[in-house]
Amino acid sequence: MVRLPYDDRRFDQEGELALVIGREARHVTAEAALSHVFAYTCLLDITMRGGEDRSTRKSFDTFTPIGPWLVTPDEVGELGALRLECGVNGVPRQDASIAELIWGVPKLIAYVSSVMTLLPGDVITTGTPAGVGTINDGDTIAVTISRVGTLAVSVSDAGARHCPTLGAKRGPVPPAGVRPVRPR
Image (cartoon, rainbow, N blue to C red; front, side, top):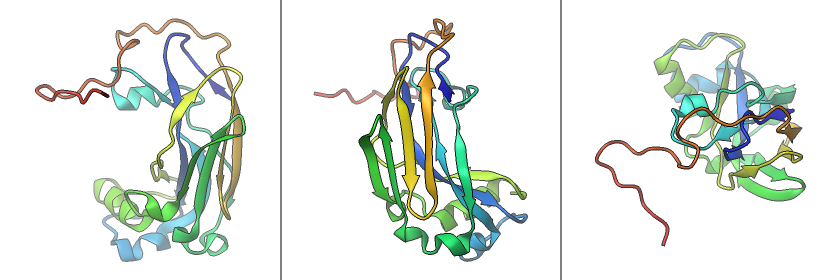
């Protein structure tokens, strides 16, 4: 279950493919990257909108449900053939090929391994396709990735309080000197 911590903030769902590292990886090439993957699984990245730091807005308890299965690379096959679908209350919001992600999985692993040493059990998330949207108390979110499985969770705002920060009525704050683009 995803528990929404505040009653005065917007929260969004993001369906993602996640991969679990199976052996140590440091400065691996994109060509060798997939040999470091133990398994793939489904992940929901829940995000609070507002002016706080991005890592804070994604770091609440229950905000990253993962699973329910670990599927080995030989069972998954060609990553570009995978399709991600995510919906809320049975209404489709996201529908995309994994091949359409900004960073391909091998390139992503290579990049992350250039920043840190990846160890067995580490999880990397791939990012999300278009279709992110608001979730609310009582909703059910389901992400399905072909040949990987379906992760479905409910949403509750039981115990939610007012947010103590100042970002409640605004989105992310752009860097100094950058004017945000306003919808027309």
